[in-house]
Length: 405
Picture (spheres, rainbow, N blue to C red):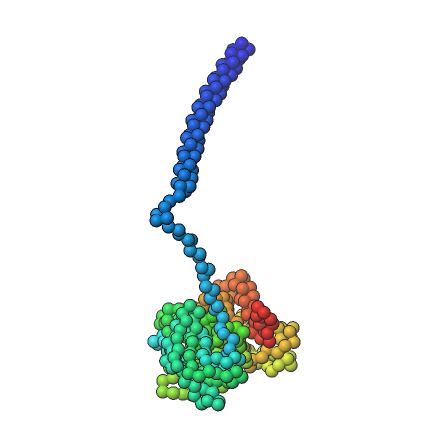
């Protein structure tokens, strides 16, 4: 017990000594810190006093110079919207995508209604070479084009006229243009895939949502500015190529080395919904039973020849979904056909082009032996989503200020 008491007393003594030493150290540190703070405060007081005395002493008029602070002007607000003076009603569009060179040429005639008197035509164009521009009007067969310019910031093509367009008039704007399809994945672009013999097959396809139609042809590239489309696509005669677009084929004309495919006139639609494909894809087709709500029509599902057997599931799902929607909405599907296509290089999961829905291959192709259940669910979900757009978005659309159509 005595030993234990001594040990405890020794420990307490050591602890007390350590506490005393630490207290002394902290006191010294605090004293040093207080001294440092006092020195800093004195220096600040001196600086403040010097600044006050300097500013308080008046200088002679010859030495004084008054510098007024220059106000910072707010940045100019850029209006990216097209002027409201003109409204397109129809595009008669001819496109020749050269599969081998990766370039394309085109001609178009845009029918335009004049809403307000104006002496210029403003529309969208990006990365296109404009070769010629002409304007025609019923009462004035030809309206001279003074010149045209590009607004690179707003992606405008501005065509200045020698005389004004009168309100209520209808004019025709004819343009010749060219562009490039290589090294991009929006607008009108080149894609390719590897065939069974290890050769690479090139195709041309398009993706215009949200504002990439202007990279394929000059247009009024805003969703509310709907117009009908009369499209002609050119494809090579060799290589098993064919052309696809939103509407059904109306006629074909054979030329020396290529074929011109004319499609039926579309319903009014936004520019981002237009679609062009030149490929050697194969397809499987089924008949859609509308149960009397509109005319029956064909649904085709397209893929590369090497993967065409993987479209069976998408074909079954697509038929079931579109027939369900027609019956549920009690509104007919307004086009004479509906196609789906699996694109080798596609920036989105899928895109609801009216009459020609395009997909990334993984969003459309299913193989029982290798694909997972998640893949199967994903394909069904994407098809249902895109087909809903045939009514919600394509047939009717919203604008910030009001409901249209």
